[in-house]
Length: 202
Length: 202
Image (cartoon, rainbow over all chains, first blue to last red):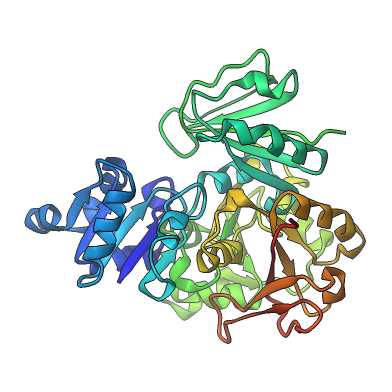
């Protein structure tokens, strides 16, 4: 069985359910920072080294190997935040049958952004700008209908947002959390973990 | 201080962070079912009775009383799922200054729906149909851009979705979880905890 579990953004956001799945798992894959978050769940150094495996090369070949391993063992893949928010959930959903995969939610940075802004998920549209710049133009049309949260990294070109008033939320729930407000043409994105809040066009 | 915390949909979805806030709180407000979810965190019967208070009348008068109480005590309000998904977060954000309010995310039924469907949040738009039928017509225009998740109860009129192919996800994470697929004009909503998945118009 393959479990793709959301760890939340920081350790205290781990759910009971996810902790239990990690503790029960035969092998746990994740990024260095995701592994760091869960390693204290294993008290024995020997067990840590045996079970926790860092994913170094993200890509289809790695995913297929993990899936192959999950035919015989309980395999857990850690996804920082929530697996279904610009995460690994859809990737694995596309590669393995539903009955062999369990995706378990975690708290995402989008939820942190909404709680900081005091805005409901049903009043916004969430856009991922990670490697999808060409499609972004079309996504911006959604600003006619709703406020927008754009998940962005330092490569994101703020010029695409013109002179709109925006809020940039950087490193939410992490070290260096910072929230800054201003016109898009006067601000700069300084973190690869940024969420840009753009108000609906009126 | 006032804490509005998401409990998740079921008990195992409680995060460490939320458990700690509840344990530390002087008084905990919530619906009967939210209180039921957290009552085992208090071992002494006496403490349970003193701290846990069911909200019977939801409305501004109750919210203002809770806010008044939070001036002198650590008050926690439980919000099933996530406070920022058609929840109490925006209500309290509108009534109290940011520095006196901490909103803490929880896992929502929307996240469960996305994990079951294998669809990313950044590919959908989430609409609340709870008591906003007139606005729904306009929201449906968003189907030109994205797939849609509609949070609905039994009062929702499926005719508004015409003859579209839909998936209804009922009671996700609760007793009686059920997922059914078909044309909107042939299905029926049988739970007040339903999410309707509608595919983008092509």
